[in-house]
Image (cartoon, rainbow, N blue to C red; front, side, top):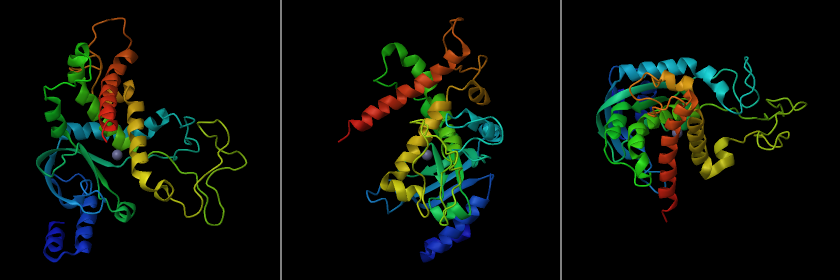
Length: 305
Ligand SMILES: [Zn+2]
């Protein structure tokens, strides 16, 4: 992989760089993880030129174990999503029969050279490589830890809630990021029509639109794709969808217990001492903390010109 990267830097060969990415994707759970090259185009208004970045990290064994547990249960957790029907093999028209979680690891970064330090990455960005070879999801756990030890609160949160907010926010943030990546991206199934008119659903007994309760009236016709239909909004809509899946699942007690948040853990789903509070209410405290963060972020963004 490194040799291909060196070749690409010395000769400018894009194919050498793409070959290095194929090797990188197939190198599952390496003892030393690295990302190097011109990767993300976020800083370019035209989304074309990518910024150079270099990352080296080592796996976080404890976190990776939790992620693996979550991954083994992911197919069952999909049943908790609101559009999934039934409990058997079929999950209804809007979900694949078997959900296969993406490759996922949690690492501690030793070096992270970039103008944006991401909490998690999902690479490569080349769609054809993702399709043919696959992709890797990586969470940077020490990035989350250092943020969680930051003493600054959030001025939009009421003074009475600051301590709870500071204590919970990045625990909630971490779970949200993981749920976003594992169950947010990758769930869902398209209703499609092939070029010879074959539908992948039963037209005699059509799926009901979850919003109207009436039979669906549209689906992906031959040649139509997600990006083709949504155009410039495709990534935005997909990210919103992944965020909402994370928000929807974050107060689930089974999921919280996989992450170690129980009544006995050091950081509890809620710090209230009131015995009258149910487990469900306690879990919602983590959700509340996260929603405070998101709503304040939303207000910040929408107030920009
Ligand atoms: Zn995402």
